[in-house]
Structures are given as C-alpha cells and as structure tokens.
Length: 164
Length: 260
Image (cartoon, rainbow over all chains, first blue to last red; front, side, top):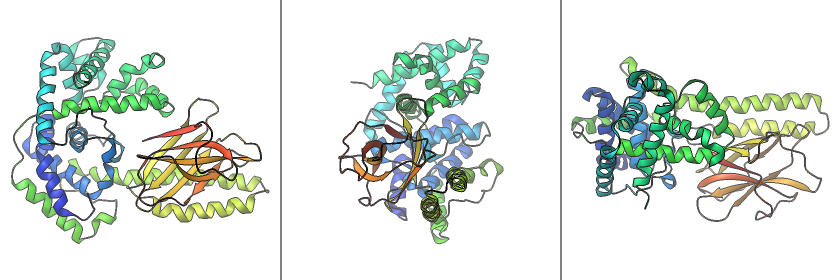
C-alpha cells in the first residue's frame, strides 16, 4: 500500500473492516468501543503502512491480531503491550480471499466446538478476555500447570487442523 | 525440541499475552538468545490468530467508513503522517495510542546513544585508533537521525551458542537503502580476517553489506554500505572472511538475526 493512497486504504477497509470490527466487538462487547478500535487500527495502518510485511503472512490475520491486542488493552485499561510493528504472525492457510477466510473461520469454530470444554474455555479466557494464566487459574479453581497445559494443547490442536 | 520443553507451555501463554511475573521474565531472557523459540512463538501467535479469525458478528456501522476517510483526509492535509507523534484523542481511554509510535522511536534512540557514550569512554582511554573512532562516532550521529523512523526495521543479531555474548543490532530502512549496524563483544580476529555482514533478502542469495574488525573493546560498526535499493530484508547474518571482504559467504554463519 503506497503511502498517501487513500483509495487503497478504502479498499483495505472494505475488505477487512468486518473482521476487525467482529474481533473488537467480541472482546469489548460494546459497539461504540468496537467502532473506536476499528477506527484506530486502520488509522495506525494508514500512518505506518510499513508495519505489515507482506512476505511474513496474511494481512487479515495480522489485522485480527492487532485488533485483538488493542481491544484487550482497552478492555483492561492498560498501555499497549506491543507496538504494531512488533507483531509478526505466521498463519498456515492462505487467507487472502474472503471465501478462504470464512471457510477457515468455520473450520476453527468446528475445531473449537470439538475441544474439551475446559480447554476451549481456557483459550477463550486468554484470547478474548485477556486474562493472565494466574487469573484463569483463580477463576476456574484449577492449578496453574493445568491451565498452561490446556492452553498450549488448544493452540496445537488448532494448528494441526490446518496442517495438510 | 526437547531442550526447550520447559518453555513450550510458557511460549504458548506468552503468544497470547497471558504469561506474567517471573515466568515471563525468564522466558523473555531465553527468547533474547534463542531463535528457535522465537520462531515457535511466531507460529503460536499464528495459531492464536486463528481464534481471532473465527469470530463472526454484525458488520460495522456504515458511518464508520466515512469517519475513517474523513480522519485520513484531515491527516493528509495537515501532513501529520510525517511525524510519529499523535495528539491524544477525545476520551482518556485512547490517549495512550499515540504513545506507542513515539515510544518505538525513543527506544531506538536510547540504544544508540548508550552505545555511543560507551564508545566515547573507550576513546578516552585508547589513544591508538582514537581519531578513526571519533570520525566513526560523528558519522554515526549524522546518519542515525534519518534512520530513526517507525519504518526502520530493527533486527537483533545474537550468537548461535551462548557465552561470551557477542551481539549486534541492525537498523535498516528499506526505501532509502540505509543500514546502520552496531556490534558489541565481538571476539578479536587474526590480522588478515574481518567480520562480514550479510543482508539476507526474502528472495535470492545473501548480499554483502560491509566488513568490520572489532576494536580493543569488541565493538564494530558498519554504516551505510552500498546496497541495492529497495531490497526486502528477511534478516541479517555475520561470517568471518578475509579482511577485504567477499562477494559470497565462504564460512559458516556465526550470528544470525530474527525480526523483533
């Protein structure tokens, strides 16, 4: 995306705004706050198009991760953990096309549905509520070690589902 | 990956920003010198991204699009894009968003200046190459100003095996082809040898990016070597070559970097 090209950003917005908004809304549960995060993510991208390195992964995945991080920080009222430049994401499936993305999304939902409930819930608490491992342990009454094992196992299950 | 089993679960938590306290500091120390774990971290972040991608929901309100385009038009008109600093927006919740871009620039500056002041002290006590090093110091100051932008890609090159701890930092601005590389704790070399820096592009063979010999304190630098313009760098690496340098690497990679 060449700097100064407002049309290019509008195109990216048309393509990716729904995923950014969906992630922000999922985390924040508030449409006004989600809209603010949506605005800020695209503004940051506009100001710093060099932050995304196309050779390293899919823009959709990158945007989704940036959005989730920003939304969690807003949810927990803390300073950003990472700058958008620091985030590098390797995602196996090619998620450039909308059809691929919604197929991938359905597949992930299927994998999550098939996971043992405590594993899925630990993942969701970490990912969408931004809870730390000790907070999850306290909330569930489970030992720290169990939480750690569940979260890693959950991520690996997701990874394996997309390895051919 | 048996040597890293102890870190495997912590890495997964860290990838989701869910790791805290001593576990986190221990892992971050390990990550500083373990490229393998950094790669796994990248993978785990990708796995986490799948969670983000699985969300569905209503489309954003139509007004959001125009709001964004208006904000961009305003910024372009005011040439705000050339400055990394942003003013806090309405509402205290978003005041910190401008901090992130500014902090990135400041952190880079601090690292460089610290190195320069140590170099200056080394100058005061070493007469021999004093004049040469002073010139290099002045060069560094002159070239770092344009390098310090959010677009600069920062790569830390760390030793493949641990102690001693040779290290280096490369600051690369692709569009200008500007490269500043600073090395510390580099072991001394025989008189006819030098360290050579390589830019590893995303496609193609390693590109020679300058030679340097460490000074008495193990410090070295490469400043703006001639590089093909616009090369996309995957990472940087160091080998030992004859002191005139070589067009292609002739010895095993001693140090290699990962994006940070």
